[in-house]
Length: 287
Image 1 (tube, rainbow, N blue to C red):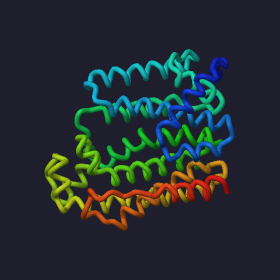
Image 2: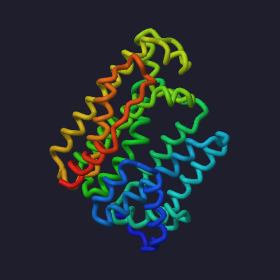
Image 3: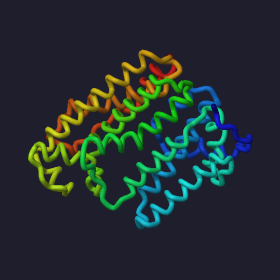
Image 4: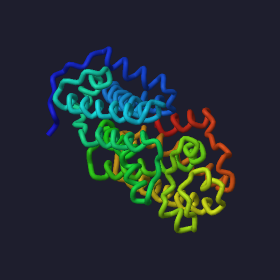
């Protein structure tokens, strides 16, 4: 049963959420724009929420300040589900939470993921821990998104989890060197130890040739999740899930380029030209 809140959201709150999304430069802004207005507004609000808590984790403030700011967002989510948010983004979320029955647990999972990223040093003890992190920072976004797209079925939740893991693992493999410079290292320690890498220092690990096999194995896991996401889509309305399909093809393109580049030069950047992203958005977002 959907939670019912009074209709107190304002145009200004919706405009704020759209502006945050548009100004972020995300390649998915175009994918969101293919949605009907009420779904589009819902996705803008969810994205604005993600952007704002992600910015807290990424800024240079002391750890205590970042944790306090994320704690305040936990309070704002409590207020949201009482129908009394105070932030522009919280107000923008009122209608989507009511209309699409968005779950509080998914908003809180995102904060949990940002609390991990906010730490002065980030590492993953195991593949299981990494997958849990992926579920927090990407899967939870997927869980919110598929409900806005129009489905809360088991298959839609399978799509959200598997695609979320595929996208986040691809991000990790693409940005492994950049993240290491920020003292964030997501390659699981159990996988590193399995190939004989005892060090927990990112700079040392990056220079160890044995890390190549860890990246290759993690890429295989990501490929498996892309396949699982594709299988989940066969049970869903693809037109309803168009933004998810666009994201899947963009990030599958990144993974394919990473595999083509190989793992011997992790500093070599991998990009998808804007024109190809536009083609993907047109091909899978409109038809």
